[in-house]
Length: 446
Image 1 (cartoon, one colour):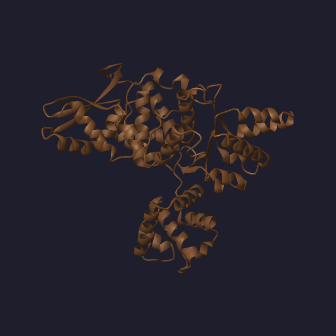
Image 2 (cartoon, one colour):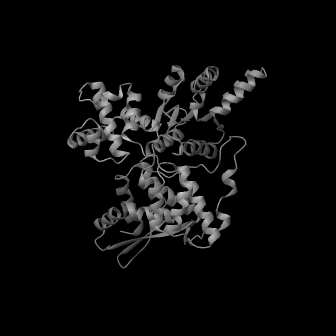
Image 3 (cartoon, helix red, strand yellow):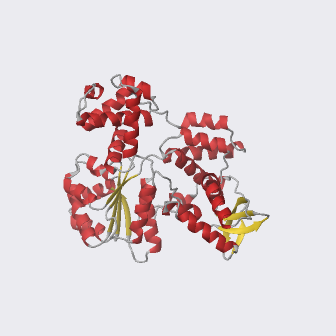
């Protein structure tokens, strides 16, 4: 078979093995450029995609190729870019001052209030945000009908704003005639207060009801602001009844936003509520590779891995450190080594908060409204057993406490009991979204 047919068969096979989002991210616009001496050369868009395929999918791709053709013995990736109808080699990009912080990253479109830097192309997909990304893709494919409203929640720096603005930018660029507006809930509140003071509430209502898509960030700001919540409720009904799309974000699940009206919670629950948890190590490494590739910043493998391990959970913090590394690289005129990077991280990354057993037990007891002493006692009451198991899971998963130590601290239990609790919660998390939300809320409290 020819090279094109061979690669199409490989892609068809890979599509059955990975999620739709990952397939689109890593395999889109790839092709075989040549097959020479038993080695297949595959063209990819950038060095980031090349490294990711080599690290994550190389064995699977090569195995599939060999199953299709017994003459293939090797696989290489070549960074290329499309130049109309021909493929040309993409030269290596060196870090330059002009590449550091592009001015258009800070330009906000006056009509939509969207920042054009937030796109799906620059959104790094990993296991931690794959569900939220898939929900966003469903929204833009069937606007106003699927997942309306879409409610995205998660702690600061997990990529919520990037994702919801990417929805807006995609609609703005691809759906002619659709009007989009992005704002924070604080902006909505201030506009409403100003309108009341100026006796211009009808003008305020008309301003927001004219859009086809409203994207509102940080909805938790409206906590206990009853009049503004009432106005949002009416705006929601008008837009939703008209088949127009609404997207919200918050730092927590709407059911756990204090002072939020039940009728708003009910409206949010009628659509899709999706969490973006902290990025795990592989995703943090992918984010670092993507952002350094975009800036033309070269990092050695050990440096990239160190940064991924040192900066936990906050994408904004990752971006800040990368910008600092870029600035220092330009000033010193050479690629920074691991020791230099470690010194920078000490100065620019907040030290981790090491939660103790006491901290975790306190958070668990507060969340489940039980006494702290109940968790330590040898009771089998249902309302206590579950929180105790979750406490053990968090101590092991998040705090790295050994099973014997957890057992000793939680009422002198055998390590096998702790192991059983940990495995039980770990398995149930795969099929129980409500448990995942509970644990996310406890983590937020910590």
